[in-house]
Amino acid sequence: MLKQDRRTTLNADQKNALYADATKELASITEGETNVTALMATVSCVLAEKFDYYFWTGFYIVDPIKQNELVVGPYQGTLGCLRIPFGRGVCGTVAATQKSCVVDDVHAFPGHIACDSRSNSEVVVPVLDRTGALIAVFDVDSVETGSFDDIDKAALEAIMAQVFAR
Ligand code: SME
Image (cartoon, rainbow, N blue to C red; front, top):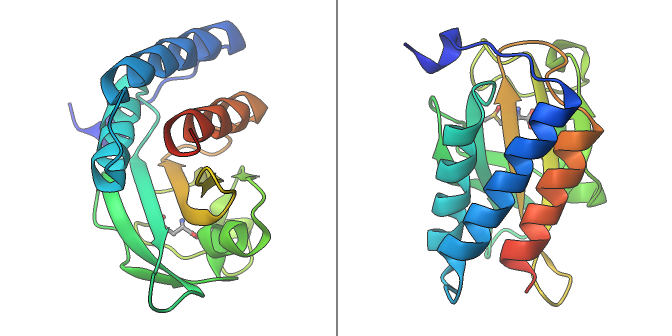
């Protein structure tokens, strides 16, 4: 079955249980690994596999040369756009503010960048290193509207801290 055809509504307990599993698995798989590309690829893969409503799952990295621009990093899903300026769309807004964002309907979000028109809702969280510097944002899109809530946001923030700020 194609990923975009798998539509699943989870209740809060089911979501929390899957995030608890993913958090435990990622702690064990990434233990001792410091390579950021390997960590980003692993986080994208484990989370995309775990959640049926994750349609696009991945990282936009702060470009080391153009510091006010994001460039696509490891991801799972359909083709993502390559670059996003700080302040544009959901990812660019999260990079500029360093505050997570849950969007129930991306088409109502000013400046939303439609990499794939099938995406309808998303959650984006900032990714900080151990010094507190922004290194990337983590973006998850769903084909359904309203897929993400505070459970997704809090769990993803905790996973990013566990993997990238230790
Ligand atoms: N939805 C994002 C763009 C990235 S893609 O969806 C993969 C945004 O508006 O920032």
